[in-house]
Image (cartoon, rainbow, N blue to C red; front, side, top):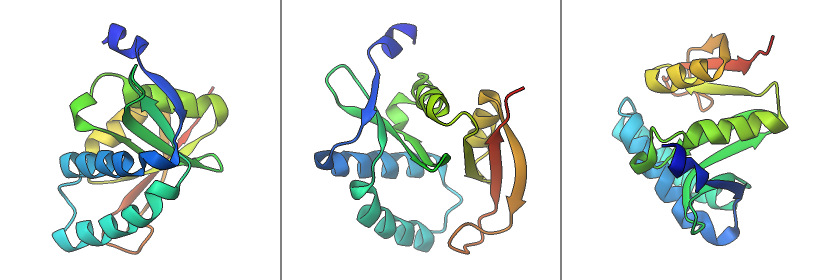
Length: 152
């Protein structure tokens, strides 16, 4: 793993990388969000395909510049962190989070309560639970755990 991370760099996304970013999102959601109903998964996909390619994202890219993961931060709140499942467990997501924390030391994020692996990941990174919402931001029945980095 350590050798692989030496080949990773973090940079801002480019407009021509939208299709790859959507591919990462789809692959990651299919691997981790099995709690979504097929109808909600399709509705969210349509929103993501419209929004994500236009967004300014932090990308983790390999030595050839190929995107492996992305993070979206808006005003200190991490709106999204998705790693291509082929590269999960390599420390790439943690590298992106550490990069985000270097810019926003008190960064916050929200995670689906049904995504226990993600909650565990963020808590291992040092995030603390600050609250819970019974529905997601679109009012769908997917409870959200609110997390914040709290440094001592």
